[in-house]
Image (cartoon, rainbow over the protein chains, first blue to last red):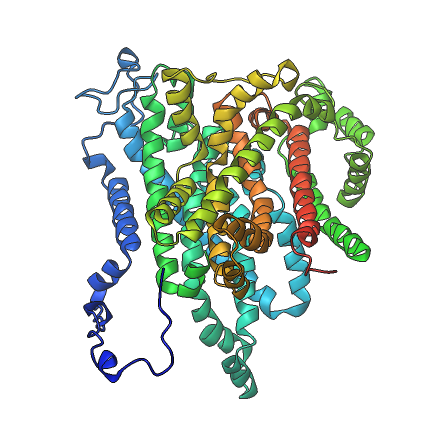
Length: 308
Length: 313
């Protein structure tokens, strides 16, 4: 760049007056209001949310979406390639993969939402106790440190080894593995909120602790908790599939994506579609929840969004 | 500094104690009575009682826990119910494939993710940045076995560039060893790369706005020097921290990756042990993995001073 440096005073009145008008870009923008406006400002929420709604619809209406009984055996029809009669082909016992994958949506969503809700509620409680009760804090946090140093999938596997495989137990095992993260998050929020002037003011004016928690602390934990809950939901669905895939998850009778993949594993080199269809559904669903989480994070906590 | 190291090492003791307590409780409340199994079908209740006493199973929880901990500290993890081999020997037999897989994955992930994150932050808002961020979201969403099967299908079955499954020991040559590990490492590294790239980008974005970066630019440092010497060095601490935390993902993912690619490592051992309800093996593997995880994060904590001399203890 070659810019001539002008001596002071060289800028004439005329050249200042000739400054171009502000371009249109600088015009104040009127953001669209309402729900639609919100969605256009946060396209990830729109995309993730609608994909997730689609999956929920699939789970609810699975029996009406041209599916057959997902557990009906048909040995004559073993390992057929995808066709008009069997859209996703059949597995090694002749069961219709399309029907199994659609019914599998139910298991994944139930586990995902179940773990997200359970881990949030329990983690919220533990985090609040830890943030408010000084003597309990160090004990709780040491226990959480201990639990967190066991990789969460291993922790869930270990718990599943103790119990019979059932959807409830899977939810329980994954929840236990997720609780430490939530309680740490809540504790952190509580500790920083306790230093806020409005909490000091509430304490000074004689507000009782439960009221302070209810009115000043809880509402402020909601935003980070919602974001965290979506991420937990996504990772719970992956963990459920992993547990089922290695044979420590939902019982093989129940068609879950992990189970379908586990059954397709022996044949995957010749019949890859048995593994790939549930894999695609799982990936899309997890992607939907993750997109929703990213969007919620951006809209609920813009500062955190800038950091990561 | 020395006092800090001692304090930090001591701080891991309660954490490992809680892990040990959890893992021990696992066996304690596990269904099935070892005494009844050993006594067999013909045994009277008195026989079972006698065997239980001889095994020390009738003593209180804390006494047994204490003895168990001392046995572990002496390097005795017990005997597998299924194979009757010492758990330590079973782990020793399986450790090489898992260790190889993790080292290759770690190397691959760091060499790919850090430059990706740096470039994304440097060109923030550009299509490269968007591409990296989209890749990161995908990396978090597509489960490791899905990536594994896709890679195996295209690069092993269709293109025949790599072996489909299995493992070749390092002793049989670096080439075969590596060719067996490339696909599993890429599959396992997906989430990890996403995680590291995201944190690298975020930290670099912050660092690039600092005054000393402007100074570096002003004094005429080249783009490369500016990015990788001035900026990346200052962004190192959060990146290294996340690399340590992410080792948990590697450990969890190894269990699945080894199943997909039929690698006879610790992950397979864990899965087999779960299916057979071989509790001593499950205990041993979980203890080992947790210990490694705690150790890695301890080392990373201690390494902060290397990356940032301003940190003094």
